[in-house]
Length: 245
Ligand SMILES: C[S@@+](CC[C@H](N)C(=O)[O-])C[C@H]1O[C@@H](n2cnc3c(N)ncnc32)[C@H](O)[C@@H]1O
Image 1 (cartoon, protein in one colour):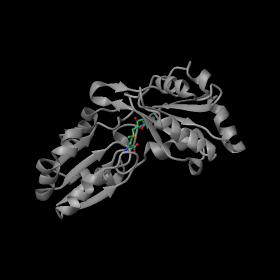
Image 2: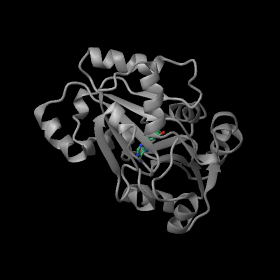
Image 3: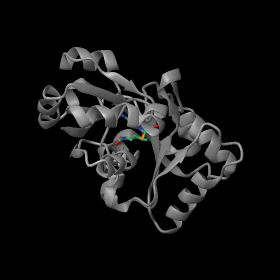
């Protein structure tokens, strides 16, 4: 019996890999981790319809505190699919669950997929030139660490991928505009070049580039959203980014 960690990609139910889909066919229990991200265009119901199987919603509490009595218990008896939006071990890592399965001698298999970490390559920004990724939490009144990460990356001529908090169970998603409000208050220069990204991996993603103060006035209506704080640009990056300005 195996616990499969299956990446779903970013856009909709059809972004799963062929290997992921074939694996789901041999699983009797399916769990969907739906607290750390959201497919741009599909819901759990869409996935159920596409796979023709019922999917259990895996809340943070279920994964972090109740896995012994659910996912891991099931995986001792039958094939279980743990479905993760994006890639199973990128940005949000489910290594804890994997280690717990290992400790219980439950066989595991990982089926990777696209992550927001690499899908932002669509902007034309060179993935080799990113420094540490940071996340802006909703509760950020007394938090400066995301801005410290950005400043440090800029000092080292590196771009920053800024992930934005979300709470899919309450349909709450931080926007690029809210993130810029927060960063400008902390001292991000108004002229800092940034790229706002919404619904990447979906059919028609929104990508807009410009100075922080100008970008703040632009509208991003798809979800989830993230942004890039750009460091010094290579001329190829500049040429690619002009498309989004
Ligand atoms: C914890 S990360 C997602 C991790 C996921 N396992 C992955 O590999 O993509 C979630 C954050 O990434 C960003 N994100 C995820 N999907 C996105 C998308 N399709 N478009 C824009 N930003 C996205 C958002 O800032 C979101 O809050």
